[in-house]
Image (cartoon, rainbow, N blue to C red; front, top):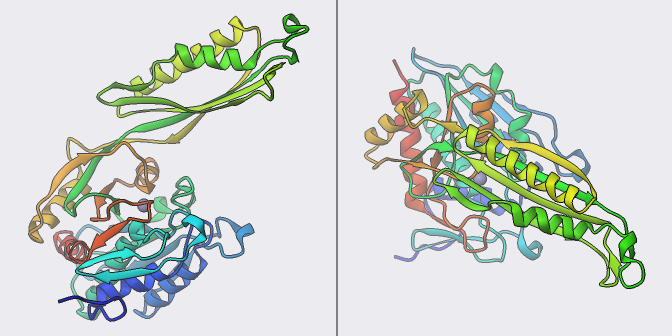
Length: 379
Ligand SMILES: [Zn+2]
């Protein structure tokens, strides 16, 4: 039977639709954070909001933190998801629809299942825990803002002061049951070559060509997939003004990632060396910047969050599998801050595009997983 958008008659799907209808691109999370706060306070929970991340935006909000004290001994856990989405194409507003068991957007906007599917599953599970007085060993929620803007909410979060012994971020693509055990370390590399401009036809010898230096640097770099755990890329090159001017400025922007920190250091050093040699060769100056974009993690040998997640999936009757990712998310930041966290697949697909979708079944599987997790965390 075809089910239509407004009356899903499924409280979890309804909750997701409510969340998905509220626009919340990074920096404009105010309305969705208010919605979540009201819903959590309605459960009798205390909710704290951190400092607004983009105060200049006018609709900014902060991370939400909320704790349910444990009623039985066991392992206190943290559940996390982010409330922002990527920006909407052509500023189209979200128009979520539920058809044939699948949630998608009718507009050019993303659906926002990344990461509102996780928000819905977490909040709904918490409602079930409270309404049914399910015994639990302590549950903390950390619902971040600014994830899509460079994990900025996570970076100012308070995970160090949380009671949780481990955490679960629900923020990866792929079928529910996917446990992301490895994520790479990443650094960005940027360089601005500064030469000297001159008329290219009249006095080229007086010029110092910044574009030639950048080209030489990029040509000397090993890029692409360097081995099974390391990648590198130059994604931006910008410089010059006219065909008849020796260009005095050219900037390049790139990155390197590896699951192995030594390999990452080696690759970044090689990129820096290529940049410096090229600058020297073209007799231009160079300003270099290397930024630690995110720290990786590796739970491929196991660990508390992996153990609990796999036991919970088993209990919920959901097939589980370990995977690794080439990307970063809030979970990288939490691990760096000292809370062992694992990222989990939520069933969302084609994220960051207007074709994004998720099935109601995935929402229910996530919900079942969280309830099973609460059970296995009990002593
Ligand atoms: Zn996400």
